[in-house]
Length: 383
Ligand code: NZQ
Ligand code: ZN
Image (cartoon, rainbow, N blue to C red; front, side, top):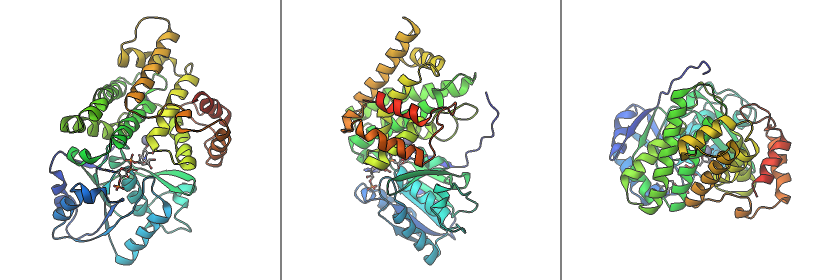
């Protein structure tokens, strides 16, 4: 296991009715800007609970943050923060709203030439407006991590800073009951792939991280299909919500290698073709497993045994079976598993490879050895 320093400063308020706790979580002297998306919070009662909890606060709102949050939209919120003097941000929504709010938090305090450089040039974030969140879609882990993904045209870029980790996150599984089956499935698959990308690399004798990751994978495989079959089951939603947070709050990733190849190729699929984030991952991950089976052999065999109980046959047979079972799980969740499923053809590969190059994604994986040519092979394997 590699050395590491771990701190997660986000207070979690988990369970039914916990939206009320934001009244105590935000300092009373703050002027709060509530940031949300396209309006789901207005129809599922979340907005009303938030406004009740903000009773006594000086607050305003900014709506319209879109899925895969757009830079131009977020800059309007930055203007509002500056002109109206907001000094606390409350994100209410899914990962896009939380990510977008993180960018607003950083861009509102940005002193340089162009806030897009926070993403484009990875300029360090040194000061932010403090933020908290009410999460309504378990998927990204954004509620308690320092990551944010923002899009501008076809460029979908990431920045990360410990300063944008939310001070608190309300996780009330009840708020997730209004999700469409598509968004439920997307969330489960996103959390599953986050776990896989921190697990499926090479062994470093990190037993806690491995078994914790395996626990998350088991939970998502067990509960994901239940969330589709019995959508009113709150206990199922609770287990999914807590799994998604744990999958990307930093804990399973400490001291172990990570391979974010699937996410990086996936971001290009979203940027160029608008495919939902999780649906890019369910297409790319199986191809990464196939193309990188030698590099990942030891962990693939561990995954085969501990997740699917595959202990007989040759190593190749067990790996093949584990990949097939992963694809079967994705299919059970109703997400695409090939580029053909989303109507892309070989002609689209060049576009994706050019985007990867443009964004500097030319040395991916836990070994930094996935060149654009290997990414091409992965994409060709994804048909
Ligand atoms: O905008 P509203 O009206 O709220 O509707 C949203 C949106 O249309 C809807 N929704 C959210 N909660 C709902 C609901 N509808 C009904 N009931 C509810 N309770 O769901 C739609 C999708 O929301 P979005 O926030 O886009 O989904 P998700 O949480 O999957 O976030 C995806 C974004 O997060 C980024 C992705 O790239 C993508 O941009 N990621 C962020 C990460 C991070 N910060 O660490 C890591 C991830 O890998 C990911 O890259
Ligand atoms: Zn993701």
